[in-house]
Structure formats: structure tokens, C-alpha cells
Length: 265
Ligand code: R5P
Image 1 (cartoon, helix red, strand yellow):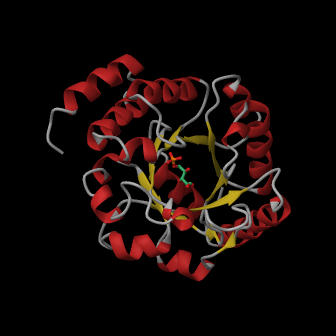
Image 2 (tube, rainbow, N blue to C red):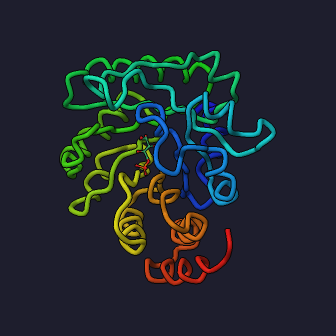
């Protein structure tokens, strides 16, 4: 692996081999998402606990201090919206020059396997990998399902992750599934991180599924709504850190959450 890729991956993947990415890119297709209306304010108390943040160039420029040393995963695909015809109709929306100018540690792009625009999004990924590898920038592929959340099953996710890795993604972001998640990981030759999806009912549910994903080989999370839409976002991200980087059990993480939620953020 070339030096630049290794160096940037080392900024993201911690010495213990684990990651806690904080995504705030949701506005790129759904506008001012609940609790992300002012992204700069949302992330301020959370940044110290995240290993990296994932966002678009517009939010990076307007909401993140350029002297911040927090590694950036730049979301570079887009071109559709929740009110448009088809969420899968994406292209690359940020040039390689801009990616370099913004000093991204990695970039992320969605692929929509099984959708009308499957071919287009896979070719987009291939072109992005070619461009980014020239400059030592790792690509994280996002196995998107659009509105079809029911697609999040092991067989489908394994297919998506493997294809993303075959095309050259250095990291793949996918969803957790309760059955056979290990098969998703085993079929993918590059590290897998999981997204959270829409906010779930209880914190312990989040800690349980992340713990299970880690036990089955995921290297960490790219978790957004279940952090910053929580009533206690700082307590939430601190417990996630303990779960991911300090090998807490879900019960221990939950106890820590209950303790920290009494602390004023
Ligand atoms: C989708 O909007 C983005 O790619 C998010 O970064 C991804 O879905 C992770 O965020 P969440 O945990 O909110 O699903």
C-alpha cells in the first residue's frame, strides 16, 4: 500500500484497529435534518469523542474551523434529493482538486446496488477510486439502500460490500443486520464500518447492535442519527467510545450512559 494511503488510513483507523466516525452529511439529500439544522452547533460538544467526521464540502467550509485537526471524510457523491424521482441517481459532486484542497483524509461515495442507477453509481465509484488512488486518498464506499430499509439483510449486504471492495474501496460502510452479519464481514476483504440508520427506540438497543457488529468483525461505526438525535448526545458518544475503544459490554456502556446523562453537556 502506498505511503499516502497508509498515512491517511492511520489518521482514521486508530491503533486498536477500531473507528468511531461521526457523519453529518445527511443534508446532502434531505436538507436540514432534525437536530442537524445547525451542524456546527450539533458537533461542537461531540467532536472531541469522534475519530473523524463525515460531511460535504459545504458544511465543512461553513461549520468546521479550518484549524481543527479532526480528520475529514468528505462526502463526494450526490445529485438527488428526498423529493426527487430516485435517490439512487447520484454522481460525483466534488472534484479531485477540491478533495485535495480541503485536505480530506478520505472520501465517501454511495453505491446503489439493485437500483435503477446501479451501473452509474458503480462506475462513479470506479472512477473515484482511480482518481483518489493517484493522490493517496482512500475511498470509503457507502452501500446505500435509499428508502428501501428492508433490504438490510446479510445476503444483500454481503453482495454490496464485496462489489464495493472489488471496485477498490479501501473501507466499506454498510448496515448491521441481526442475522449472519459475520457473513457480510467474511465476504469483504477490506474493513467494514456500520451506519445506524434512523434513530431506534432505546440506547441499549444501539449498544447491543454495535457490540454484536464488533464481535462479528466490524471495525467500528459511522453513526449519526443515533448520536446527535439522542436526548443526551454527549453521553451517547462517550458510551460508544467505551464500547468501541475500551471493549465495554452493552450493559457497561449503558451504565456509563446513565451516569453521563446527568452531566451537563
Ligand atoms: C446517509 O445519509 C449518510 O451516508 C450517513 O452518513 C449514514 O447513513 C450514517 O448515518 P446514520 O447513522 O444516521 O444512518
